[in-house]
Length: 388
Ligand SMILES: [Zn+2]
Image 1 (cartoon, rainbow, N blue to C red):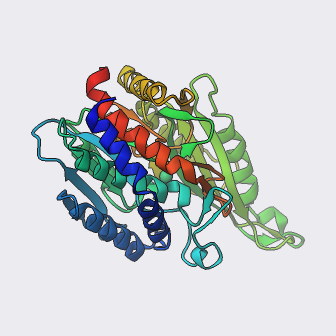
Image 2 (image 1 turned 45 degrees about the vertical axis):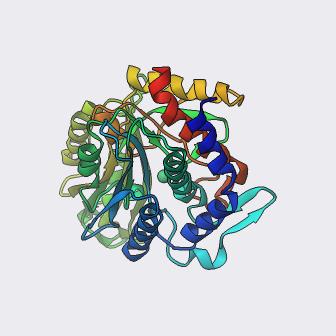
Protein backbone atom coordinates (compact mmCIF):
# COMPACT_ATOMS: atom_id res chain seq x y z
CA UNK A 1 0.00 0.00 0.00
CA UNK A 2 1.27 3.45 -0.79
CA UNK A 3 2.67 5.59 1.95
CA UNK A 4 0.07 8.37 1.84
CA UNK A 5 -2.78 5.89 2.13
CA UNK A 6 -1.13 4.09 5.04
CA UNK A 7 -0.54 7.38 6.84
CA UNK A 8 -4.17 8.39 6.31
CA UNK A 9 -5.31 5.04 7.73
CA UNK A 10 -2.99 5.42 10.72
CA UNK A 11 -4.40 8.87 11.37
CA UNK A 12 -7.96 7.50 11.42
CA UNK A 13 -6.93 4.54 13.62
CA UNK A 14 -5.28 6.92 16.07
CA UNK A 15 -8.25 9.27 16.37
CA UNK A 16 -11.18 7.03 17.26
CA UNK A 17 -11.82 8.80 20.55
CA UNK A 18 -11.67 12.25 19.00
CA UNK A 19 -14.06 11.14 16.26
CA UNK A 20 -16.49 9.82 18.85
CA UNK A 21 -16.41 13.01 20.89
CA UNK A 22 -16.95 15.15 17.79
CA UNK A 23 -19.89 12.91 16.87
CA UNK A 24 -21.36 13.45 20.35
CA UNK A 25 -20.75 17.19 20.09
CA UNK A 26 -22.48 17.51 16.71
CA UNK A 27 -25.45 15.33 17.70
CA UNK A 28 -25.82 17.39 20.89
CA UNK A 29 -26.39 20.57 18.84
CA UNK A 30 -30.01 20.22 17.75
CA UNK A 31 -30.24 21.19 14.09
CA UNK A 32 -33.68 20.32 12.76
CA UNK A 33 -34.26 21.85 9.33
CA UNK A 34 -36.23 24.78 10.81
CA UNK A 35 -33.74 25.46 13.61
CA UNK A 36 -31.51 27.98 11.86
CA UNK A 37 -29.58 28.82 15.00
CA UNK A 38 -28.68 25.17 15.56
CA UNK A 39 -27.66 24.53 11.95
CA UNK A 40 -25.54 27.69 11.94
CA UNK A 41 -23.85 26.53 15.16
CA UNK A 42 -23.02 23.18 13.51
CA UNK A 43 -21.50 25.10 10.58
CA UNK A 44 -19.35 27.16 12.99
CA UNK A 45 -18.10 24.01 14.71
CA UNK A 46 -17.17 22.48 11.35
CA UNK A 47 -15.35 25.65 10.36
CA UNK A 48 -13.37 25.53 13.63
CA UNK A 49 -12.43 21.93 12.94
CA UNK A 50 -11.20 22.76 9.44
CA UNK A 51 -9.33 25.91 10.48
CA UNK A 52 -6.96 23.50 12.22
CA UNK A 53 -5.73 22.11 8.88
CA UNK A 54 -5.58 25.50 7.18
CA UNK A 55 -8.58 24.85 4.94
CA UNK A 56 -10.29 27.89 3.50
CA UNK A 57 -13.88 27.77 4.67
CA UNK A 58 -16.79 29.95 3.59
CA UNK A 59 -20.10 30.10 5.39
CA UNK A 60 -22.82 31.18 2.98
CA UNK A 61 -25.51 33.03 4.93
CA UNK A 62 -29.12 32.17 4.22
CA UNK A 63 -31.93 34.44 5.42
CA UNK A 64 -34.70 31.90 5.79
CA UNK A 65 -32.78 28.62 6.08
CA UNK A 66 -29.76 27.14 7.79
CA UNK A 67 -26.46 28.43 6.42
CA UNK A 68 -24.43 26.49 3.87
CA UNK A 69 -20.71 25.73 4.18
CA UNK A 70 -17.97 25.16 1.63
CA UNK A 71 -14.36 24.42 2.46
CA UNK A 72 -11.29 23.80 0.34
CA UNK A 73 -8.38 21.87 1.77
CA UNK A 74 -5.06 21.57 -0.05
CA UNK A 75 -2.99 24.11 -1.97
CA UNK A 76 -2.33 22.10 -5.14
CA UNK A 77 -3.75 23.58 -8.34
CA UNK A 78 -6.01 20.88 -9.77
CA UNK A 79 -9.70 20.17 -10.14
CA UNK A 80 -11.03 19.21 -6.69
CA UNK A 81 -12.62 16.05 -5.39
CA UNK A 82 -15.88 16.79 -3.60
CA UNK A 83 -17.34 15.52 -0.35
CA UNK A 84 -21.03 16.35 0.00
CA UNK A 85 -23.51 16.31 2.85
CA UNK A 86 -25.93 18.31 4.98
CA UNK A 87 -26.02 19.71 8.51
CA UNK A 88 -29.77 19.74 9.18
CA UNK A 89 -31.77 16.80 10.56
CA UNK A 90 -35.45 15.81 10.46
CA UNK A 91 -35.70 15.96 14.25
CA UNK A 92 -37.68 18.72 16.00
CA UNK A 93 -36.21 20.78 18.83
CA UNK A 94 -36.43 19.01 22.17
CA UNK A 95 -35.81 15.52 20.74
CA UNK A 96 -32.39 15.52 22.37
CA UNK A 97 -33.88 15.65 25.88
CA UNK A 98 -35.42 12.19 25.49
CA UNK A 99 -32.88 10.82 23.02
CA UNK A 100 -29.42 12.07 23.96
CA UNK A 101 -26.27 10.73 22.31
CA UNK A 102 -25.58 7.26 23.66
CA UNK A 103 -23.61 4.21 22.60
CA UNK A 104 -25.04 0.81 23.45
CA UNK A 105 -23.78 -2.57 22.25
CA UNK A 106 -21.84 -1.15 19.34
CA UNK A 107 -24.64 1.13 18.14
CA UNK A 108 -24.89 4.90 18.58
CA UNK A 109 -28.17 6.77 19.04
CA UNK A 110 -29.29 10.40 19.02
CA UNK A 111 -31.08 12.82 16.67
CA UNK A 112 -29.37 12.73 13.27
CA UNK A 113 -26.78 10.16 14.43
CA UNK A 114 -27.04 8.43 11.05
CA UNK A 115 -28.51 11.14 8.82
CA UNK A 116 -26.00 12.59 8.84
CA UNK A 117 -23.92 13.80 11.75
CA UNK A 118 -21.88 10.60 11.43
CA UNK A 119 -21.23 11.42 7.78
CA UNK A 120 -19.97 14.87 8.76
CA UNK A 121 -17.50 13.32 11.22
CA UNK A 122 -16.28 11.02 8.43
CA UNK A 123 -15.92 13.95 6.00
CA UNK A 124 -13.93 16.03 8.50
CA UNK A 125 -11.60 13.21 9.54
CA UNK A 126 -10.98 12.20 5.93
CA UNK A 127 -9.97 15.79 5.19
CA UNK A 128 -7.73 15.83 8.27
CA UNK A 129 -6.25 12.42 7.52
CA UNK A 130 -5.43 13.33 3.91
CA UNK A 131 -3.92 16.62 5.05
CA UNK A 132 -1.63 15.01 7.64
CA UNK A 133 -0.78 12.15 5.28
CA UNK A 134 0.50 14.68 2.75
CA UNK A 135 -2.05 13.91 0.04
CA UNK A 136 -1.43 16.55 -2.64
CA UNK A 137 -2.87 15.24 -5.89
CA UNK A 138 -6.04 17.33 -5.68
CA UNK A 139 -7.71 19.73 -3.28
CA UNK A 140 -10.61 18.24 -1.33
CA UNK A 141 -13.70 20.42 -1.33
CA UNK A 142 -16.47 19.99 1.22
CA UNK A 143 -19.99 21.23 0.42
CA UNK A 144 -22.56 21.02 3.23
CA UNK A 145 -26.11 22.30 2.89
CA UNK A 146 -28.16 23.56 5.84
CA UNK A 147 -31.61 22.63 4.57
CA UNK A 148 -31.40 19.38 2.64
CA UNK A 149 -34.15 17.57 4.52
CA UNK A 150 -36.73 20.15 3.38
CA UNK A 151 -35.51 20.16 -0.22
CA UNK A 152 -33.90 23.63 0.03
CA UNK A 153 -37.37 25.16 -0.23
CA UNK A 154 -36.41 28.38 1.59
CA UNK A 155 -33.00 28.95 0.02
CA UNK A 156 -31.06 28.88 -3.23
CA UNK A 157 -28.78 26.11 -1.91
CA UNK A 158 -29.60 23.72 -4.79
CA UNK A 159 -28.42 26.29 -7.33
CA UNK A 160 -25.34 27.05 -5.25
CA UNK A 161 -24.40 23.38 -4.97
CA UNK A 162 -24.45 23.15 -8.78
CA UNK A 163 -22.20 26.25 -8.99
CA UNK A 164 -19.82 25.05 -6.26
CA UNK A 165 -19.61 21.51 -7.65
CA UNK A 166 -18.95 22.40 -11.23
CA UNK A 167 -15.47 21.57 -12.48
CA UNK A 168 -14.84 18.88 -9.83
CA UNK A 169 -13.73 15.39 -10.92
CA UNK A 170 -15.85 13.34 -8.53
CA UNK A 171 -18.34 13.69 -5.68
CA UNK A 172 -18.66 11.39 -2.69
CA UNK A 173 -21.77 12.04 -0.61
CA UNK A 174 -21.49 11.02 3.06
CA UNK A 175 -25.26 10.52 3.33
CA UNK A 176 -26.76 7.67 5.39
CA UNK A 177 -24.95 4.41 4.69
CA UNK A 178 -26.98 1.26 4.11
CA UNK A 179 -26.48 -1.88 6.20
CA UNK A 180 -26.67 -4.01 3.03
CA UNK A 181 -23.52 -2.32 1.67
CA UNK A 182 -25.36 -0.61 -1.18
CA UNK A 183 -23.64 2.45 -2.65
CA UNK A 184 -26.13 4.69 -4.41
CA UNK A 185 -25.60 5.52 -8.10
CA UNK A 186 -29.13 6.74 -8.86
CA UNK A 187 -31.92 8.43 -6.92
CA UNK A 188 -35.41 9.31 -8.00
CA UNK A 189 -36.52 12.93 -7.87
CA UNK A 190 -39.52 14.02 -5.85
CA UNK A 191 -42.17 16.66 -6.20
CA UNK A 192 -44.72 17.50 -3.51
CA UNK A 193 -48.07 19.20 -4.08
CA UNK A 194 -50.98 20.35 -1.94
CA UNK A 195 -54.53 20.60 -3.24
CA UNK A 196 -57.26 22.50 -1.37
CA UNK A 197 -60.89 22.17 -2.40
CA UNK A 198 -63.66 24.50 -1.31
CA UNK A 199 -67.29 23.42 -1.70
CA UNK A 200 -70.49 24.69 -0.14
CA UNK A 201 -71.14 23.66 3.46
CA UNK A 202 -74.78 23.20 4.49
CA UNK A 203 -76.78 21.17 7.01
CA UNK A 204 -76.87 17.57 5.79
CA UNK A 205 -80.47 17.07 6.93
CA UNK A 206 -82.16 20.41 6.26
CA UNK A 207 -80.92 21.42 2.80
CA UNK A 208 -78.50 18.83 1.41
CA UNK A 209 -79.42 19.73 -2.18
CA UNK A 210 -77.79 23.14 -1.72
CA UNK A 211 -74.50 21.63 -0.58
CA UNK A 212 -71.42 20.94 -2.71
CA UNK A 213 -69.22 18.31 -1.10
CA UNK A 214 -65.52 19.17 -1.09
CA UNK A 215 -64.83 15.60 0.09
CA UNK A 216 -66.63 14.09 -2.91
CA UNK A 217 -64.69 16.38 -5.25
CA UNK A 218 -61.40 15.46 -3.67
CA UNK A 219 -62.28 11.74 -3.64
CA UNK A 220 -62.54 11.85 -7.44
CA UNK A 221 -59.27 13.74 -7.64
CA UNK A 222 -57.48 11.23 -5.38
CA UNK A 223 -58.41 8.36 -7.68
CA UNK A 224 -57.46 10.32 -10.80
CA UNK A 225 -54.07 11.22 -9.28
CA UNK A 226 -53.27 7.68 -8.09
CA UNK A 227 -54.10 6.43 -11.59
CA UNK A 228 -51.33 8.57 -13.07
CA UNK A 229 -48.72 6.15 -11.69
CA UNK A 230 -46.58 4.77 -14.50
CA UNK A 231 -44.63 1.78 -13.15
CA UNK A 232 -42.72 1.30 -16.42
CA UNK A 233 -41.30 4.79 -16.32
CA UNK A 234 -40.86 4.62 -12.56
CA UNK A 235 -43.17 7.59 -11.96
CA UNK A 236 -45.28 7.08 -8.84
CA UNK A 237 -48.06 9.27 -7.44
CA UNK A 238 -48.98 8.92 -3.79
CA UNK A 239 -51.71 10.87 -2.01
CA UNK A 240 -50.21 10.54 1.43
CA UNK A 241 -52.30 12.96 3.48
CA UNK A 242 -56.03 13.74 3.34
CA UNK A 243 -58.31 15.87 5.47
CA UNK A 244 -61.74 17.47 5.18
CA UNK A 245 -65.09 18.26 6.72
CA UNK A 246 -65.97 19.39 10.22
CA UNK A 247 -68.94 17.44 11.60
CA UNK A 248 -70.80 14.39 10.36
CA UNK A 249 -74.11 16.19 9.80
CA UNK A 250 -72.77 18.87 7.44
CA UNK A 251 -71.99 18.63 3.73
CA UNK A 252 -68.26 19.32 3.84
CA UNK A 253 -67.16 22.71 2.51
CA UNK A 254 -63.45 22.04 2.71
CA UNK A 255 -61.04 19.20 1.95
CA UNK A 256 -57.36 18.93 1.12
CA UNK A 257 -54.71 16.44 0.11
CA UNK A 258 -50.94 16.27 -0.16
CA UNK A 259 -49.32 14.40 -3.02
CA UNK A 260 -45.81 12.95 -3.28
CA UNK A 261 -44.55 12.19 -6.78
CA UNK A 262 -41.33 10.27 -7.56
CA UNK A 263 -39.72 10.27 -10.99
CA UNK A 264 -36.55 9.15 -12.75
CA UNK A 265 -35.67 11.64 -15.47
CA UNK A 266 -35.17 15.34 -14.60
CA UNK A 267 -37.22 16.45 -17.62
CA UNK A 268 -40.31 14.48 -16.51
CA UNK A 269 -41.14 17.20 -14.00
CA UNK A 270 -42.86 19.57 -16.44
CA UNK A 271 -45.14 16.80 -17.60
CA UNK A 272 -45.93 15.77 -14.01
CA UNK A 273 -46.87 19.35 -13.12
CA UNK A 274 -49.12 19.51 -16.17
CA UNK A 275 -50.87 16.25 -15.23
CA UNK A 276 -51.51 17.45 -11.67
CA UNK A 277 -52.72 20.85 -12.92
CA UNK A 278 -55.19 19.17 -15.28
CA UNK A 279 -56.72 17.24 -12.39
CA UNK A 280 -56.81 20.36 -10.21
CA UNK A 281 -58.66 22.22 -12.97
CA UNK A 282 -61.13 19.44 -13.72
CA UNK A 283 -64.44 19.85 -11.83
CA UNK A 284 -66.16 16.64 -10.78
CA UNK A 285 -68.66 18.41 -8.48
CA UNK A 286 -70.08 21.69 -9.78
CA UNK A 287 -69.47 24.94 -7.89
CA UNK A 288 -66.36 23.66 -6.14
CA UNK A 289 -63.02 25.44 -6.46
CA UNK A 290 -59.54 23.97 -6.21
CA UNK A 291 -56.21 25.62 -5.50
CA UNK A 292 -52.94 23.85 -6.20
CA UNK A 293 -49.63 24.60 -4.48
CA UNK A 294 -46.28 23.02 -5.29
CA UNK A 295 -44.22 22.42 -2.15
CA UNK A 296 -40.69 21.06 -1.73
CA UNK A 297 -39.00 18.84 -4.29
CA UNK A 298 -35.74 17.23 -5.30
CA UNK A 299 -34.21 16.74 -8.73
CA UNK A 300 -33.38 13.12 -9.55
CA UNK A 301 -29.78 11.95 -9.24
CA UNK A 302 -29.38 10.70 -12.78
CA UNK A 303 -27.75 7.34 -13.41
CA UNK A 304 -24.74 8.02 -15.63
CA UNK A 305 -21.89 5.89 -16.98
CA UNK A 306 -19.56 8.22 -15.05
CA UNK A 307 -21.36 7.37 -11.77
CA UNK A 308 -20.86 3.68 -12.57
CA UNK A 309 -17.16 4.27 -13.26
CA UNK A 310 -16.80 6.03 -9.91
CA UNK A 311 -18.63 3.14 -8.26
CA UNK A 312 -15.97 0.81 -9.74
CA UNK A 313 -13.35 2.84 -7.85
CA UNK A 314 -15.35 2.28 -4.65
CA UNK A 315 -15.61 -1.42 -5.42
CA UNK A 316 -11.86 -1.76 -6.06
CA UNK A 317 -11.19 0.10 -2.83
CA UNK A 318 -13.38 -2.34 -0.89
CA UNK A 319 -11.45 -5.23 -2.44
CA UNK A 320 -8.14 -3.59 -1.58
CA UNK A 321 -9.26 -3.34 2.06
CA UNK A 322 -10.48 -6.96 1.94
CA UNK A 323 -14.05 -5.97 2.75
CA UNK A 324 -17.19 -7.64 1.37
CA UNK A 325 -18.04 -6.15 -2.03
CA UNK A 326 -20.57 -3.29 -2.17
CA UNK A 327 -23.27 -3.18 -4.86
CA UNK A 328 -24.64 -0.33 -6.95
CA UNK A 329 -27.97 0.69 -5.45
CA UNK A 330 -30.89 2.64 -6.88
CA UNK A 331 -33.21 4.34 -4.38
CA UNK A 332 -36.39 6.43 -4.37
CA UNK A 333 -35.28 9.09 -1.89
CA UNK A 334 -33.52 12.28 -3.02
CA UNK A 335 -30.21 13.87 -1.99
CA UNK A 336 -27.87 16.67 -3.03
CA UNK A 337 -25.91 14.21 -5.18
CA UNK A 338 -28.54 15.12 -7.79
CA UNK A 339 -27.06 18.59 -8.07
CA UNK A 340 -23.49 17.33 -8.44
CA UNK A 341 -24.62 15.16 -11.36
CA UNK A 342 -26.49 18.12 -12.88
CA UNK A 343 -23.18 20.02 -12.64
CA UNK A 344 -21.60 17.23 -14.71
CA UNK A 345 -19.72 15.68 -11.79
CA UNK A 346 -19.76 11.86 -11.36
CA UNK A 347 -21.23 11.02 -7.96
CA UNK A 348 -21.76 8.14 -5.58
CA UNK A 349 -24.00 8.53 -2.55
CA UNK A 350 -24.65 6.88 0.84
CA UNK A 351 -20.93 6.72 1.69
CA UNK A 352 -21.56 7.69 5.33
CA UNK A 353 -21.73 5.70 8.55
CA UNK A 354 -23.99 2.66 8.22
CA UNK A 355 -27.18 2.19 10.21
CA UNK A 356 -30.94 1.87 10.12
CA UNK A 357 -34.38 3.22 11.11
CA UNK A 358 -33.53 6.45 9.33
CA UNK A 359 -35.65 9.50 10.32
CA UNK A 360 -37.37 7.59 13.17
CA UNK A 361 -36.86 7.87 16.94
CA UNK A 362 -35.02 4.52 16.74
CA UNK A 363 -32.47 5.82 14.20
CA UNK A 364 -29.09 4.21 14.94
CA UNK A 365 -25.59 3.95 13.50
CA UNK A 366 -23.08 1.09 13.75
CA UNK A 367 -20.08 2.61 15.52
CA UNK A 368 -17.33 0.54 13.85
CA UNK A 369 -18.50 1.65 10.41
CA UNK A 370 -17.66 5.26 11.30
CA UNK A 371 -13.96 4.35 11.17
CA UNK A 372 -14.32 1.82 8.35
CA UNK A 373 -16.15 4.27 6.10
CA UNK A 374 -13.62 7.02 6.87
CA UNK A 375 -10.82 4.74 5.65
CA UNK A 376 -12.84 3.74 2.58
CA UNK A 377 -13.51 7.35 1.64
CA UNK A 378 -9.89 8.42 2.16
CA UNK A 379 -8.73 5.51 0.00
CA UNK A 380 -11.40 6.19 -2.66
CA UNK A 381 -10.20 9.78 -3.00
CA UNK A 382 -6.61 8.57 -3.46
CA UNK A 383 -7.68 5.72 -5.78
CA UNK A 384 -9.77 8.02 -7.96
CA UNK A 385 -6.55 9.08 -9.69
CA UNK A 386 -4.83 5.74 -9.79
CA UNK A 387 -7.75 3.44 -10.75
CA UNK A 388 -9.13 5.48 -13.61
ZN1 LIG B 1 -29.61 12.91 4.75
